[in-house]
Image (tube, rainbow, N blue to C red; front, side, top):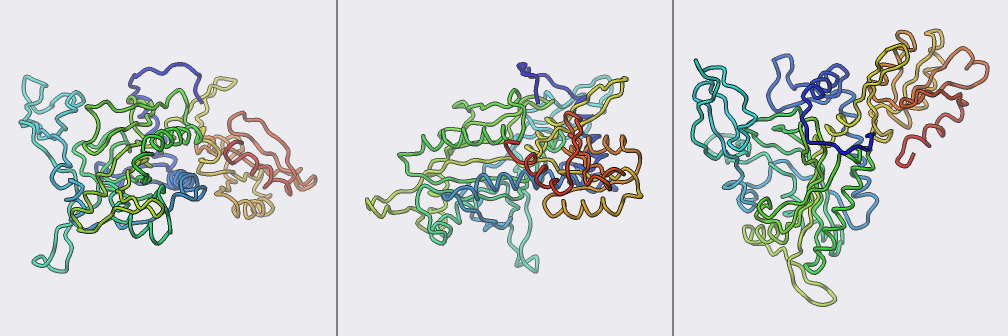
Length: 449
């Protein structure tokens, strides 16, 4: 996708504005509760966006769970026992430094004041009048119970990984897994971010795809390196420009209290390099803490050596929404055509594209046989039928949706049994026999095509 040049850390707000506009117009992503003016930090995925997101999650699950015999999946509840978050130290320590402006009443993270912008409520000055910084807990609370007197305070999970630790013993035994093995999950998490920003990048409701891999202490380094390489390769495979992704190891001053090592997969967004996935050596901290707080022994005994130990954990944690945003940024291109026309095209990898093929009869009179082709193709992929407007405009609409192939049924198709298949990127057109169409597309819609 890229031109091979070395990207610089420069901000491009115009590029984000163009993407946000396209996402709303074409039904990728738009503000939640939009008729009420939206709600900050919450986004809805439209018809194209939900297909893109589901394709990403399905590919992650295929790669991380179904293609492996040493990783199993779960789908844990969003609300966990409150003691879970005491053990993980979220109740006391999961906070960001916050300040308020006394003049405009806006709230900011104390470590991000460079992005605060001018204050529009002070006379004779555009500078904010900040309060002293104080900690702000990011967990969202809820009450459980039928009456206020009998209710208990619970939390919407701020991360999906803790249930993978509390379920460790049950899953290992029921799935008959031996160390090393992993537990994977895709699910929602919630954080009461002080200043949600950068479109869907920092939101209050988001989705994570996480895997906790449990290993013997002597093998933690080799598995950390293995998963670092695996996860970087995944982002290359889904079509992200290799010149705009990197591994960035954490310095000692950045490491979380539980981590011995951590490395991010960063993508170069229009607003700078930012993390879309992290790989972490969490040691035995989580299992040890949950053992302590629950009173349940989460250590294991090796059947062969009789050694008793608490497994170390190597974590891979992908932000689904952040990676979707990277895919959208990566795909958006504008091309100048002959005659000075400009086409907007979303160059998704075919395996990720929301719509795999569009069926476009040259005339509405050809609707019948074109709909038959649609019925056959929709048994295999998400496809789209469109017979409204001239063929050129229909091509452009599909370019903006990122559809890799357009299938045109014309008047000759009734005679020769062939359709015209147009390639989104090259705009080349091939005549393909209708009875060979599924095989033709199948060969071009997967990884390695």
